[in-house]
Image (cartoon, rainbow, N blue to C red; front, side):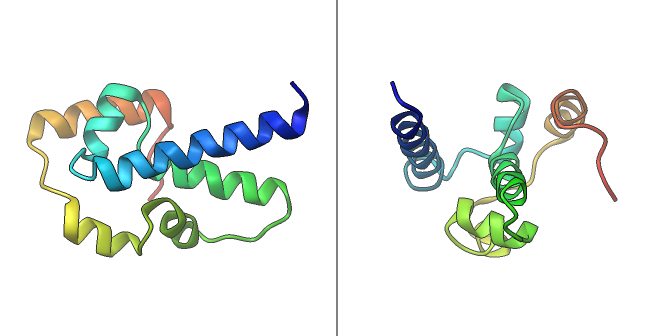
Length: 105
């Protein structure tokens, strides 16, 4: 497979993942994704932003999140995010530390 085709397939797979999370399964909470998979929608947006930066494209965190969420992040949170219980929050802190790193203030 040539590089262009591979890139196109990877991009299509990424778009399918984002569509699945945002359209087909918006009820799946980021905390659950992080606790089970070690990543969440915010990770996807950070990876997108990092990929843009590697190519010299300036992109804010909010701009990257809007690409992944399909709307401003605050709007998505208001529509879909629910409060997590203490056990989920503790599991999240562990998963975040293991998969992302220390939380930035």
